Amino acid sequence: MESMWLCALGTGVFAHRTIFIKGEWHLHAPYVATTHLILWFVMIAITKSLSLPFILGTFYLTGLFSSIAVYRLFFHPLRHFPGPRGAALSKLWHVWHCWTSQNHILLDSLHKQYGDFVRIGPNGLAMFHPAALVVMDGGGNTNVPSEWYDIVYPRTSPIFSRNGVEHRDRRRSWDLALSGKAMNDYLPRIRNRVSSLLNVIADVKSTPIVLNDIVYSFAHDAASDFAFNENFGMLESPTWHRIVAQQRSALSLLGRLNSAIWLVRIGLVFFPFIPAVEAWKNLLDFCDTLAEKRLINEATEPDILSYLIQDLQQNSKNLSDKEKKNLLSGNAVTAMVGGSDTTGSGLTSIFYFLALHPHHADKIYNELRHLSHPYDTHQLSKIAHLNGVINESMRLLPAALTAITRITGPEGLDIDDTFIPPNTKIGSPRYTVQRMESAFANPLEFIPERWSTQPALIKDARAFAPFGFGRRACVGKPLALAQIRLVLANVIDKFKFAFAPGVDVASVERDMKDYLTATPGKFSLVFEKR
Ligand code: HEM
Image (cartoon, rainbow, N blue to C red):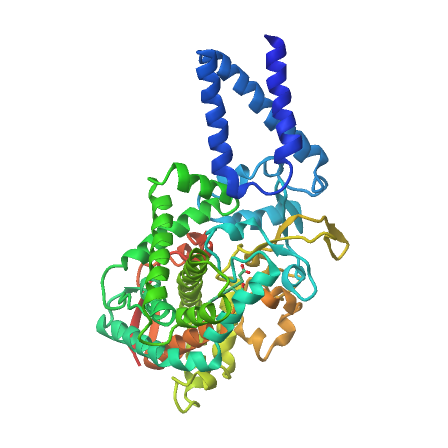
């Protein structure tokens, strides 16, 4: 009997050393779990007993997990980097500590405790260094996006392409979809949404209004229109559009499981009834259906999807119908989340900082007096204080607080005197890096002038990249900034605003969630006509 137990133990060690230590397993997680369960049931059927398969299974798993633990703690290339022992053992440590969806706070505290390079997972390293963002994505690097980017697999898009050639091909159509010519088609529609937002503010008169709700409504209405010709009508409705509500719930799932997406894959297969998992599935289904519809029916007005479909028809004849659908659906997910949640998050943070420091809103108001029209996006892109306020808000509360991870190439990489081994998952949490003393003087203070009249307050500009760096940088940056500038200029031109009485101002940052994009705590403002 003892030899059977030893054999099971050895099989566990063998499975780790010969199978699981190689390659990536996140996409196979549901199959691995299913195969193990099937084998276990087969053993029960053969032995006609529960106890023996249970004991053998326990020995097998002990062998497997002991081998994994010994390797990760004592032999892994990252073993010399500091960090919590639990994090080195399993990604579940990170998931557990992120259960409140505040990964930015967790990583910030790990930086304070362990220093600039912290092992935050068995194969994961967080780099808290002003040069880290450039090293990850700047010119000449051989890093590739991490396994996280398979989150909607088999759907895909530029952001979800882990292969450089595929990424270049898929990015081409987005470059066209967000070119100056295309933007001229979207801007009149965006201006109409800005007018709707102004009407909502004017209608409530001086009653407090939840700022987060109105700017996210604006962002979703604008994006549903320019991305796929739909009118979510959220600014005109007291309730959230069904699919936006699902999206918010789905993102809360990512806030917890972002560091271990194999759990998301397992959730979709085994636990589809959990509300947040169901919401994630509904969001994907919505994008699949949208893709199917759009492959058949043309849009009435130009939108991002119409450029992508045109590119598919001209340059992707070798793709099967299924691949085309997956490509379009992945792009729809990208537009849904990347095109609206980010802008909503950015606007919320900016209004928060302006309500905290109202003299900056007054300064912008005075700048606007020199413009012929506050609806001119070109003029708005040139005025110093408005753009300083936007930059400074995005520095302190970037929309991508901790997201964006890469895997180092075959030669690893050097950053100052630290060598990061090949095939390491790396990330550089913007929330902390953009607040580093080595990069910004008085880093925790809101000083928009550092972007105009006081450049000495920026010590290391490499640390600022709210839209990313290099060939994978945000293709929607001009459109995002155009929307943000239009909203700010028009609201400040017509209204003064302040926190509503009784607002717990500290809760905005304290309750902020890191749901892939930053989701600040809710707060109300009171607006007053100028
Ligand atoms: C304040 C608003 C925004 C911020 C802060 C932002 C930030 C970012 C960042 C940091 C990335 C790199 C992500 C990564 O590598 O994982 C990115 C990529 C991307 N963003 Fe944005 N974004 C914003 C708005 C938008 C908008 C409005 C759109 C389009 C409608 C958009 C479309 C994209 C796309 C398609 C990519 C993938 C680019 C590629 O991989 O080639 N973004 N964005």
